[in-house]
Length: 531
Image (tube, rainbow, N blue to C red):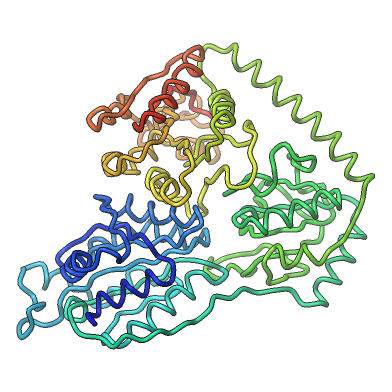
């Protein structure tokens, strides 16, 4: 049994049916073995590591185990930002990397190109060790069964995340003994004492709230949180964060200042509030698979009761009912929803396109086709009707460029229609040509606000009376304007530039029609530089 064939065969047996690949001279054995045995995992060529790693990330969001193969040090470096996204947002990812041959002669796999010397690192895994759960270089082909089993176990155990496996070229061509090793994944759960204490704190609270960011990542988490919130009458503040944590039209989905609450239940959220802006004096219950967030060096959020558990394992043990509180929250939600609708109707009358209006129209078209939104920065999900598995956005580390590639992987994993929303900056970061190459039909909407809005907002925050804010000029953050989405036409795609509110619905409708024909559609919308 060839070592590479065994490696790929074991991946396939553990459910990894597709590898997003940017190959190099380190993948000779992979290519040969795939030709010899077509039943091995499919190789999806995505011609840039940012896009390829993002496709693997999207594959994981779609319920599979995303796997990407990159070329030694250069490929690892290119993919690093996306790997960090996966780590901080707890998304499973298998990252395979070649390693420069370690022999100068004596093997058909020995070094034969100049770069085989210059690409060798003193510690290749050290490039990303801060942001992977585990890394390992295969030194002997007979280690492969344990390596595959351990990689999948660690990547898929809570908190989930990326792992990194290096395979030198000499090892990839060697013989290996076929064995099977199974190490099951695992996750934490609450103690009986912690549940009882949490129950007392919740029952004693007069104005509790739930704050979360990714409690909707798994369906059982979503359903468990929804059941508890609906029964207890406790509002869910970040009902849409990194994903939909609670239905946007649910009775407990409201916006509220957490400073007014006497109990905060922080669920799967590393930054529950911004201390600079909100002073929290209420007690805090933290429910999280890793509540300390130990990867963050400085971290001062209080925790009166820290429970290391999945959300479902915790909430499924609570049976708390409060109909009176539920009725009051519902009244508050009705008022907020009415104000939001009035706001949209008012913004529709403006000459320029406000990003909230564009979000509103995208939400309407999404409902018609039952698509999932993959959002990188600009879309405001509070102006859309969304539920489980209908929105993914705002990955915690914030490395831009992941949304386009994730569209590829998510669409392949689920078969669902996807609407991808990006800013003009994040669109460029996403390597559009590598995204187009995959030819995955989808609608991409660019919120073109002429630059990096977050950078401009930082200037206004730090210098509220400054000249840059007064002039609305932000050198270093402002862009020259081009029809950046027009490059899709080189790949037989659809493009439309939108500059007025009256064009939005027609452009989105035409875009969806082109997607149904099997094309990529890009709609670039000129929006105000605001949120």
